[in-house]
Image (tube, rainbow, N blue to C red; front, side, top):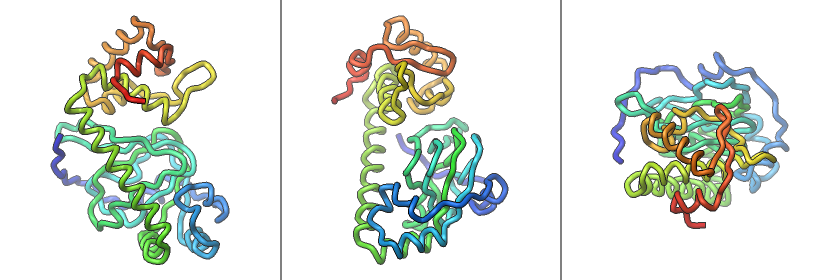
Length: 252
């Protein structure tokens, strides 16, 4: 699947969004060490990050940055969940991935000095910390371990994107839906009753799979009839994980 660059009319910067949407919060420098990407930083580097970053609370539905916009920093997610997606010329979303606690988003646009290639939207109330681009590039130049960790993160995300493109091209919609349910299980885990610990609309599921909402609704009904899942509103309970693995042609 080839995505063409879409020029958006949005002119709102991420700083303006944070002033409008977010409520300022304070986070102690030591709390940053809970995030894998920052564990290799010295106390001095960590203090500098804490001094220059801005942390805010965002409600569900808040857009942190838009595809095609200029962003001047990255965001570390302390709590909550965001969906990262591209938008086609028909206005349909294609969800690329979800970002949650500990994830760093927006950094590739900062490093490459390019416009954002995706949109980041809050789907569960979130606490985010904005890290200015100068702070991020300073860490890259001054800390080889951090630079290597960021390179590994970039490679991992590119690998996931390559796998997504392969699945879209080679797997059926039924296979992709089964794999998406397993991916959501790995990402958000199951509760004690085997329900996915994330609630998504049928449209969101369709936007992950890359198909029409009607197709997802029909396939979910088929999965339920085959005793692979149980549906309670937006909540999905996984009943037969081995069968989902088989249907999704997933290698474990």
